[in-house]
Length: 374
Ligand SMILES: Nc1nc2c(ncn2[C@@H]2O[C@H](COP(=O)(O)OP(=O)(O)O)[C@@H](O)[C@H]2O)c(=O)[nH]1
Ligand SMILES: [Mg+2]
Image (cartoon, rainbow, N blue to C red; front, top):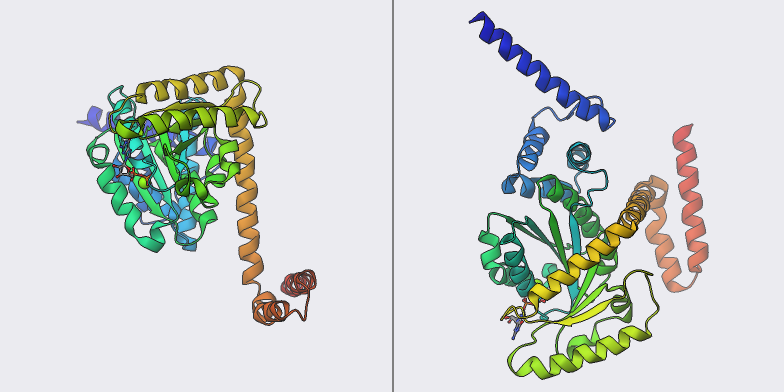
């Protein structure tokens, strides 16, 4: 009896000290400050690879509530510390892919097919869909759910669709955090789906290893919203729906994009963007598309470019956070909020120039900060 008691105590002590080491590595003295045990529970679920815990964790990082934001930071810090201990520091064993393209190109259908292809190869796949249109139409998310029917039932896949709620920057920042949580839950392939017509894909390009553009086999209307900048950012272009009657236009489209890509400025010394055609319906060309993605990953890893890219992205996101926080601080300053409507009105009427209006607000802000100090 006594021996058992001693054994239990020892186990508890080793458990505690290993946890404390982990927190110390993360630069925090106490695990989770929230006293209801919620963050600890979510953390345990995520590290244990439980999908419901991951979903709850993502909801927490998406929250704009200040208490929840603090909890989210604690959760992220702890997950990052765990990842540091468990995997290599830059986690190049995970592959982050951004998938973009105009609505209706077949992104969700492609992700379903690719996801199944990967889980059959023992990969764990997480799909994060950032959908700027869904908050307006409400339709796309529903469409995604039905389109990724099989993948959503796959135990080795996790699908999360987030409406944008009007603020693209906000969603993109949360998506960045959601990637960390997915990696903490053991997902090795993270696919982020966005519609290539807004601003979100620029933010997404700054959080993925590879940026893939999906285009339909016909040009015209469908491609109108697609900006040249997005084509320039792509590491791989996939002409989808290359089946049936669309096979010939798909071939033509592939040739057109291949020659257009030659005219673009080279972004990398080691990777020339490729154009492939495939059908997400018949799955023809799908294994080749995945092989191309793996080739990109290994070329980038071997040259050290992948680590450099991820390091650069980390600093980009730090500045994004600073920008966002500074705006919050600025707008919540009492002097600013008392005068902002009036100054905006005067700028709108042309009484004040935009530069002058900005100067006035900045001066009021500075005064407010000084008053607070006194
Ligand atoms: N013929 C054909 N149709 C496809 C293919 N992939 C998707 N579709 C169809 O295109 C439509 C839009 O697909 P969806 O995946 O929702 O597009 P998303 O808006 O880009 O996510 C659906 O009706 C799909 O069935 C394909 O490879 N071939
Ligand atoms: Mg979709």
